[in-house]
Image (cartoon, rainbow, N blue to C red; front, side):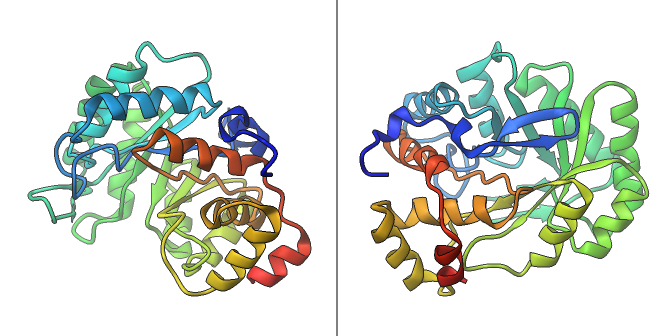
Length: 285
């Protein structure tokens, strides 16, 4: 891998995954961290954030993940500022169901009225008439999952949402969701060091849902030493190797590593071309 320039390897090298009737390159971008410190307010370097978003598209990234709670609002607004009018084939996925009453607060609100208002707000901020993929950010104990998703189904019927996904769910919750809407994606926390949702990933692979791991480069001890050894053999970085492990772990996987640096973005996207061997996968575990 060392013989290639990172910036010359497009995201398409990772192959593709289906999100309903949409097909996207399997190395994507998560736009949570283009906001300010603590995922709160605008970034310190707005121009830098815009450069990262534009460079991602230049590198073949055609799936960008965001949410109304990132900032809040800031991430969606920056995406529109950087990329609207959107190039053909670019899929923007957003989420609703978390609110930010303060810098360190992430409160759940999946009441139907809130989700409708959140979706309407995302349409305006993203400057679109229909959201490609709208995901319930998290189930809310105060509102039955069926009621929350029923409202998303109504928004879909009104033409404001194309596809529906869910996030932060168990297999049992995913099955409940499937009885209300056609689910095309699941976004749960997952990485080499955090595999608590292996059962959800395996369910998604069988059902044909895209699995979008959030915190895909999360810290964790399992496999850490092995990652370094495998990275050394491939002349890649540990982070690139962690992304390659995700891609090799399941064809349903759609990693969304985020960054505020163009150089780091190029490094992440270069991992699309890194192929781990069966021996590498066994060593990492």
